[in-house]
Length: 612
Image 1 (cartoon, helix red, strand yellow):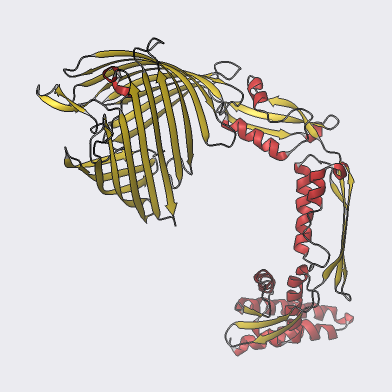
Image 2 (image 1 turned 180 degrees about the vertical axis):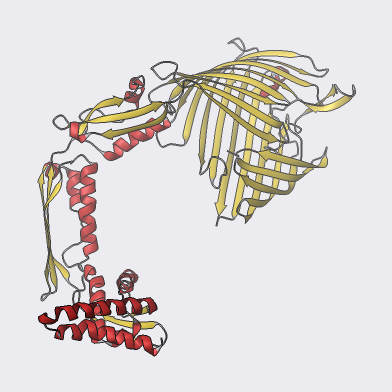
């Protein structure tokens, strides 16, 4: 720093500590003028000051050392002035202020100026104050509340511990919040004191809490349309008279927002309207529109572009019944489904459903056609916080299918069934970690609404894991079997097929299965076409590596078959791929080589949409 600034800085120090003190009261006008000069000098020097780097020595605890640096950074001092005892005392005072909350009330500090902008501050913490006695007392209803007492007695400062005022202050704040969260709305600290006996290097803690009474949950009060009154009462996780708890109220808000009935809803206590100890819970809500519509699009090599049109009426009546419908359109498949849902005990996870559907399938360049009518009743159950969903069902299915020169069949089945599904993922669109497992079983008996005996079991699953934000592993598999007294009469939609984007890549959709000679509708010649099998097994492993924020490169190996003989050989698919994490979901493109006894060819697979 130029010597001019050093001189000004020295002059400023003289003005601040000596010159002004010698001016008599009679010279007040002169004093004011000198003070103005001093202020000008201060401004000038401050403008020229450079930042100082403090090297703190003698303190091993990182938290304590950082607190010292924080306090030193608040000193408005120029390096040249640190040779002055006055400013060295200021540094020592800043260090003392920083370490005292941690029990060190007898610290000593030495300042040493080095070349450049660094200043070494050597701190001797000396013996800290320790806790000599902790006195605690609860007055009021909290005294009889076991959870309240345990929380009050959880202060981490014990006799013999080094005094830590941050723990002390944090406990006071957290105890106050705990009391309010558990219905002690009249809580206050009747006495809190931290007595420091520096000569004996001890500290005494006094905490006396006035808990007041514990308030209870009162009745619900509705703001706005109350047609949801019955539904909201069923979602309520507490009864009138239960001890108030903010966590229980938070669970209530979560249930309300997950119910699907409201655009906006919030439940809050109104303590000012309490009657006795009963606190009313005000529910402010805004219902969803009478009708809701949505459109979703996707694409895959197997089916080409696909569109799904959805309609939902969330309120059919005040009991929360809802109805929805979907129209699915792709080149090979068109379907219409309708679902009438009846909420049960847990509205969002526990409900009955009546579903009806019509589906028509016709695959290009094949003779396969299928027309299906179905009606089913489902009972879905899922425990709070559990990713497992149970589905008990009864399905009536009538399917007419035509496969070239094979006989046109119409089969009717009544199928009681059960499925168990586990689904957990960290994102709806671009999944980094996810798990999916589904177990399915269906059974039909000839003479009991079914034309044939039929039993089907299947298990499928997928595991996605990402490591170090770059390495992504996907494992996928499926296994299934059908047992029947007349496989020829099993509807084509219930048989097993393999091959395609979500099965064994390198093969076209449903290409891997038993085949039969059928007439190709375009050429008029006989072709081998898939007719479905009794057994299914597929597996896949894929590795992807992130090369940019929204791009991954991948490599995979698939294997699988659908067959009537479990000993038939597997087909394989291998190849590279690339993933683009678009704003509407992952777009996955693969170049796959299919390997089997019947076919060895390359195929491109393009998939848009979530994997789970």
